[in-house]
Length: 211
Image (cartoon, rainbow, N blue to C red):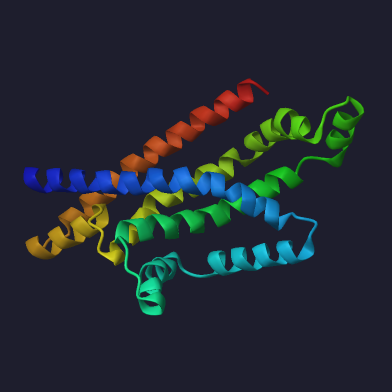
């Protein structure tokens, strides 16, 4: 049992690595997608909206397969499956974050933009000093939900043969003819989600304190 837990702990580090790399790339990538979605240039807005619809409307597991196997079939290009997993997850979550950003930005009343203009603020100053702090507070709960979902979605990279937590649990379960490794993996995911949830609770309290 000790050996099993150590093995699963080691594979959970892979899941954590997938999680943090996805957050690192998807959070900033969501901003240009949100900007494109709200662009006054209609062709750009329609194009970004169509892309968001495709990504959000198809299963993540299908996107993982397409990103890894697609280039091999179409262009005879092969690359690391871990890189493919990060690309697929980052693009997928960036699309969800983009819609969260858009909702947060559009929830700010037009009157605040007009008041800032009267006070002599530039558009950049208005966004970073007035709009962005309010948007961050508005979107924190929704962002928290998506980040918690991401913790569990890291299990999907097992479809590419990456030895993360869930794949290790499945392999161990088959070898031992027992469901115990699956339940241990569930406990690992629960602990990771508890940590993430606690972090967002602290963030929300801090944002409410400085309102």
